[in-house]
Amino acid sequence: MTSKQIFLFLFCLFTITISFGQKTDFRNGTIVQKNFYDTIPFEILKNKIIIKIKVNGSDKRFIFDTGAVLIISEKIQNKMNYTKVGSVQVDDINKKSNDSEIVSVKELQIGKLTFQDIPSLVVDIKKNYPINCLNVDGIAGSNLFRNCIVHINMEKKTIILTDNIQKLALQNAYQTPVIINQIGKPYVKINLNDEINFEGLFDSGADKFISISNKMLDKAIKKGSVSILNEGFGIT
Image 1 (cartoon, one colour):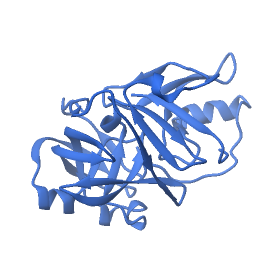
Image 2 (cartoon, rainbow, N blue to C red):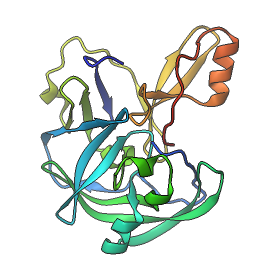
Image 3 (cartoon, rainbow, N blue to C red):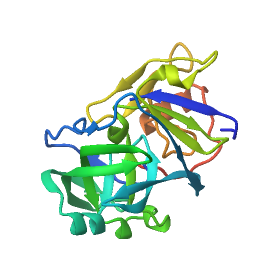
């Protein structure tokens, strides 16, 4: 990924696995404003996009991660006491399982936009590696932005949020269908050859923005369609 690449999609980073046994719908929630357009600056830390989100009027640091759902720290939940709407089982990097609450976050602000009643996981971030190395308060996951068109400009280090694609004034832009799963994660269809076809997760928490399963990766390697250049960590 070069600094001049720009990504557009419609609608993590610490290594945990989430088992959604409950029927909590992560596609709930709204944006107060209509016909909106706002530019959000971000910083890059350890190849991750960090944005500021206001929680109860106070700036908090969140990882912008389309490969995850919204996650807030236990510290935020202990202060705000958001309404619990469910729970899920979370496995950490050491395969230790814990039940995590799902809460409904009453209100968040990103730039000029106000997000209301957004489902969120509650996680003890201080105990989860490697997210505890990044000095963040949570993860801004894809369900938070499901009512937005999101334009990521890596050169300018900005994210544009709008509900009107005409406001982006795109020229000669490549378009591809995006599939949104039941918890709001965006997938794009990828064809490597006649034998390797799959839906890859558009994952801004991953170093190269696209995540695929280990099973599909092994298959592609055996077919000679891909080779491993580097390894790192991400959030699911």
